Length: 342
Image (cartoon, rainbow, N blue to C red; front, side, top):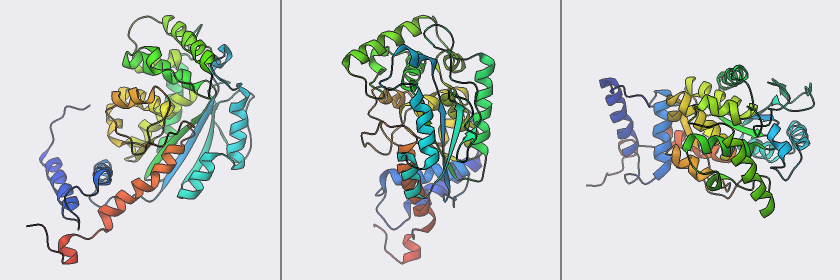
């Protein structure tokens, strides 16, 4: 985080913001986390009357070479099949974005089988899946840098007040586990989860594969290097998109385990990005709590979700929108002629 001392303008803004929240027609702090989110939105936009009306969910899809090692209960071709489901409007992400009034965009970040070349899918692939992190880096340094830059372009596109980022990629809980393992210096066994639903034997095999993949690369790693060695094209592009959205003064709605691994990378590369992040929910995936703790994050919802696709971000969007509406539209004691606490 930046160590720059606050200016007088910063101090004045903070005081005015807190006063605006505290003088609403309610007891101090009575709206709990909604007050915190409202203040965060105002700080991100630098505006005591922030706009929070539009949000886009971008789902990045890509395949993983590590899926060939049997770390998922589903075959790799499901990634492509699910992209077609998104394009057809039939996935949970489609349902939730429709019900909450969000725009949805689906991006082919590197799905096997070539371009989709169809309405509803933006083709921006970095390749047809990563290499297997068990035997070699998932991607080259140059490809990783390009994926981050390409993701940033999606984060700054359009004129949205908030952005949510989802993912689809068989094998990507393994990639996220390895990233968290190396960046948080925690044992693989504390982070590895069932992902798409592997059984006990499958979970033990998954842990063994991940521990062997990690052992291939000794020593501490930077965020960029961890992404190169173990990440996915969709994770890299989400990290870049988060950095871009934060630069554009947008709220970044962070979904579950995989999106939070991307958030961890984004926050390590560009620490100011963390100030724009609102963590949507606490995933049921085993390693999510550790990433949340590493980012000092308190998620809004705890619904037992573990689907990905940005579904948690879509469900949290109405809360974020309502927080800004509270700040802008709720009467103060003076406006309403209501007596304050003596």
